[in-house]
Amino acid sequence: MYKKLITIFFISIVLMSGLKAQENNAVSIKFIEKDSRLLPGQITNLAFFITNQTANNQIIKNILSVPEKWKIISNSQEINLSPSEKKLFIFTIQVPSSYPVGNYNIQLFAIRTETNDTVNSFLTVLTVKEIENISMAFVDASENVVAGQTIKASYLLQNLGNTKKKGNRSQSINNGYIIFPIIKTV
Image (cartoon, rainbow, N blue to C red; front, side, top):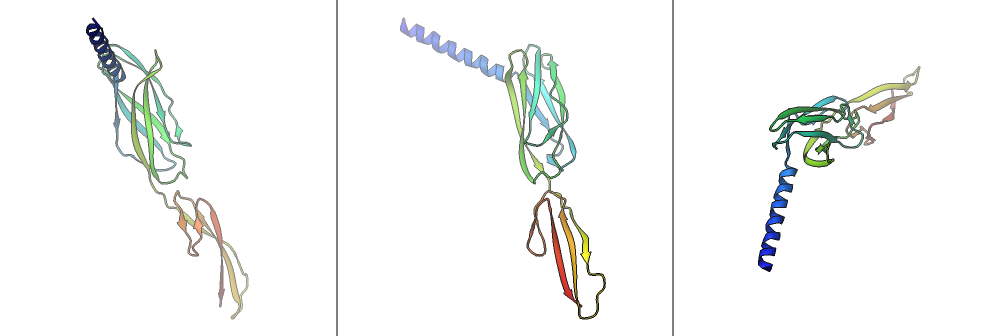
C-alpha cells in the first residue's frame, strides 16, 4: 500500500516538474548580434528573435535590463505570439557619452502578461568602446617679452573622451580639465 502511494507521489512530482520546465521554456530568445561593441553617446538598436515554443497563444511583455545611466529609448511592448510563431523585437538604447570603457551585461526578460511570470531570459555582454578626445587651448601668455626674460603661458588641457589619460606632467586627466603653466626663458 505504502509502495503504491510513494510511487504515485514520485510520478506526480516528476510530471509536475516536467510541466514546470516546459512552461519555463515557453518562448525562446535569440540575440541577433551584428556588433556588440558600442560607442558612447551613439544610439544603437539591439534585435532579438522571440519564438513561441508551445501549442498555445502567448502574450509576452519584453523588458530589457541595462546598466545604470544607460537610456532605453524604446519602451517594452507586449507581443502576441501564435503557436510556433517567431517575431523580431528591437530595443533602442543609448550609452552615456562619458561612460567608461568595459564590458557590461544586459538582460532581456520575457514575461507572460497573464500570470506576470518570467518564462525566459537572455543575458549577453556588450562592450563600450574607447573614445580618445583630448583638446588643448591657449589660456594666457606674457604680452611683450624682451631677450633674457621668462615667458609665462598657460594652456587648458581637456579630456572629452571616456578614458583616463596622463598629461605630460604625469597629472591624470579624467573627464575634466587641467591648466598647465609653461615657463621658458628666451
